[in-house]
Length: 404
Image (tube, rainbow, N blue to C red; front, side):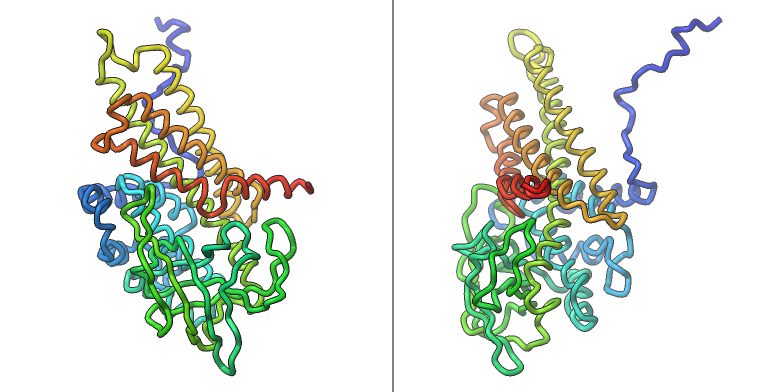
């Protein structure tokens, strides 16, 4: 006879977790991307840290249909939903190459979405379609040597001259800048443009352009040397009397600031998903290490101080994951939850850096060595607290959303 205790539901900590936003089709997609990443990308991680990853990665991903997962089929995409983009961002972390994941994300979730959203039919066919096939590579140009978070400080100017615009200025920290075929470029078209501040109804006088990188006057000055993301190319670019036709304007002239603020929301959410996945992967690797490494006659994971470190990390990762997934659900269902996206980006980026740092600590001296890979996770993740909006900007956006 069964006892009452047999009827009690027991926790199964090894059970596979699945969030409500994901369906069976997402599981199959995840398996497919993971297989590609682990067989074709991960084996080259060490080499690409020294050389940057090759353009062939884009070509191959285009062949497999991974670059346009949520893009309509008429523009070379797969016609999937937004959650497919999350799956890609999460699985690319398994390449053990933050720079590769960043380079792909710039192409898929930063530079091409504004063309799809605000571009003309001709612009979509000319740029989005070949980009989804891996035949063209995109980059995004916002930051300048003297203008980062303060978009109003942008000095790159586009001046109308008949049926053309003449562009002069510079951009820096441009991911894919040396390999890109075109750039989605934010310029100032009104010299008297008002201050552009996230959370405020200002910012007129800025215009987006799609600029082919092989035009006369486009200068790829030098590759920048960075703390992390070594496998991606990051450029300093100059634009000297670059002439583009009037139909190179992306969206509405004078409304580029608002267009780019829209773009940043999707970028931040995808970045947050990558942060969570990267933190989870680092956590799992370190957990395995803690079960194998011994000190004072026992596994280091058995010491209470280490066990509590894992408990803290797991709790923070899960809180970030749930925030990202629920916010993605709202975004996918037509809402524009800027406050929550800002919170998710802020929280996930901080958690990722904290987890990577703690994982280094658990590894001890080994964690400081390149061969274990955790130091690279910290170096790569650290950018997420700066790129696509610094922690300080995120806090300001959140604070302003409450009328402060």
